[in-house]
Length: 138
Image 1 (tube, rainbow, N blue to C red):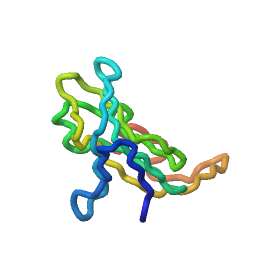
Image 2 (tube, one colour):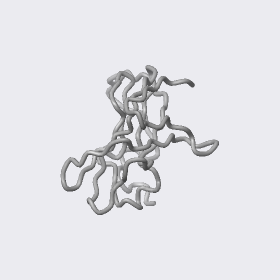
Image 3 (cartoon, rainbow, N blue to C red):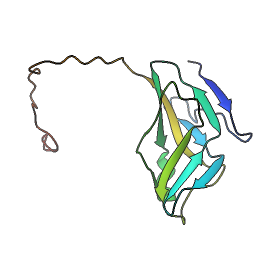
Image 4 (cartoon, one colour):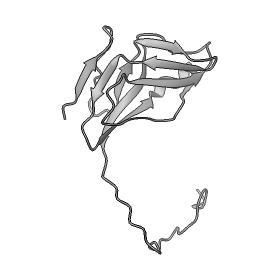
């Protein structure tokens, strides 16, 4: 699948898969904005044109543990209508944070179905039923 991408920073790196079979495309930092003592906004210098009925998801890379940071919203969502710069806000200390040129996140683009809810009086029965958190005992 081809997706239009635009460099909005001269040093931006077009994402590619590191290995055959990878799901995520690594995103390389082109700008850093310290938002407060614990939050950094990392810009990737790219804008993309995600097709309708698809969504872009931003996940941290597995190496994030080395930076002692977490992605502030767990998973970033890029809707098909968004045309601005791809970025990620991470929570961590100023002692451990990414630098310009580091690969800090990964992009996965997936299709999603169009959902239309239908209100009903009852839902079908299942083995689990209404059992919530920890209900499976595992």
